[in-house]
Image (cartoon, rainbow, N blue to C red; front, top):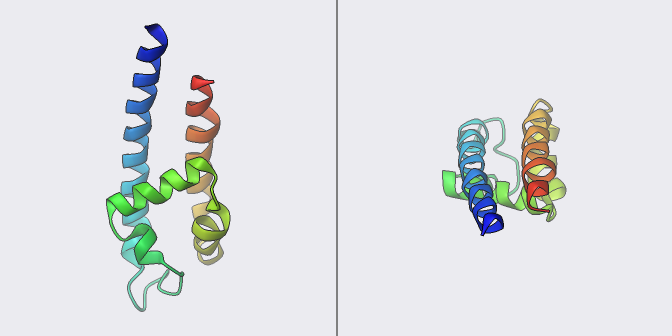
Length: 103
C-alpha cells in the first residue's frame, strides 16, 4: 500500500515537472520556430515544441532517453549552447533524480 502511494506521488510530481519544463520549452524554443527566428532551421521544431502538449511529449522523450540527443537537444544546443543547461537540469531532475526514487 505504501509503495502505491509513493508511485502515485512520483507520477504527480513527474507530471508537474513535465508541465513546467514543457511550458518553458514552448516559451523559450517553440516561439522561436517561426521563419526568420532563431530556431527556424531546426528540423521539426514546430512539431517538437509548437505547443505545450507537444513540448511535454518531447520532454517525455528526453526522460526515456529515446534518441533525445540527436532529435531534440542537439539541434537546439548547436544554435544556442546555453540551452544545454536547460536539458541537463531536466535530465538530472527526472531521469537521475525522480525516477531513481521508484527503483
